[in-house]
Image (cartoon, rainbow, N blue to C red; front, side, top):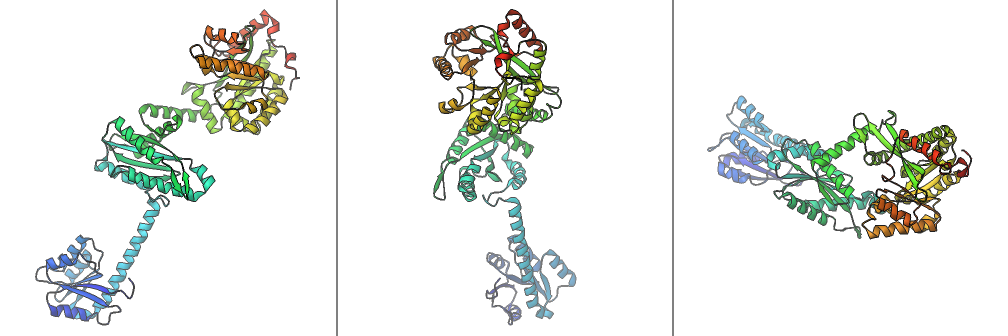
Length: 583
């Protein structure tokens, strides 16, 4: 309290003389004293509606005493020092008053102590308030996010159980909302713009969420909310969709219109015993599913949970699969459509785990790419293919080119070209025995880097193929610059072309384009005789698919190569035809 402010003093006394006696004790007080006198219980209760700096009460009043006055003060919630004054109360009663919360208890025979007692009580109050303010500041730092002003995850976890216990479960949902593109916005417009977006999103969510909802911010653009909804599942989904549309309305930050891509995952709170970590995990799994689908929101279901647990198990087991020698290769023949003979093969990675069983490639390849493990796995595939080609060659079997799939992560590996060169050298193979297949989208991720690397490999003699052609967004100008030998038409066009005129037109156009660029064209996914007939009619060069053969283990390929050599050696590509010496 500032020195110039008046001291607001409430006196509880049963006579004007007693009040005047108490007031005289403040004659030499450092500050001006503004006092009021009450003697009845009702008057005292009315006075407690106002703010007072200190209350001085006579222990014995006609209607009530100091003990009751102290209790009424405490019930009011006011933080106001209370000093009792007594002419007859004993030491035991005085101690009881102070233990109950009185700042002091002064005898009327020693009223000279009243002024110093008030000073001491006010100082104690100021210290208490300062300590409380500091505690609040520390709590805010510990439990609130500075940027958004919202509770953080720690506070949210603590409060959620109370919220659920108060009747929140049953018709309640937990929702994770992620604001996409924040790193890109930070890189372009700066951190302050991102902070502005976070604050605006927080404000919108507070307005849009139902009354009584809990909302928190855990950083990195991630908000978590819990709210009650008695609507049906379809209506609840519609409500969330509406919320997400309004959340996505552009934001004006620093005189710029900024678009964000909010993505939400929602799970139901089925009972009050649900661990918060499980609820968050489910909502985040649903959010991940929405992100993968390119949607703004998704509700959690147990199929998502099973898929999530499966993905986690695969990710954990994948880390040691190479060391455990759990990987193997299958080889699918390619057929020359003009001759009907096998002209090459594609090596396909397979994983059989002792705990998970056979894991399909579409379940583990993407995880290997995310973790970066695909670099080591891909290097093993290249080495193993070269070793197998050498074994077949040593067994006097035809040397057919084998294609290996390569990911964008491998292309970014500075040692990738060295890995290819060393594998060919160790197996004493001509470089053209190895074909590297890269998807159109992977090449377009970093086209200039890909062109430089592929040019080095092509100069070495390795054959380069663009896989899944037609599914990406490459331009013809880049296609001309790529050092490639082959285009491979994605199986989605082949499977549909019997019944879909557009797919047939695309396949025919790709074949014509490849031939105009002097490229070989391969169709994958050939499963019906009608596919084969059409591809032959448009002069497609090669094909592979279940119509000819499923991917086979090494033991199944060797007899095919032996039969090929026995029928006509002309179809076994001689080593000289590769046009390059062994590396």
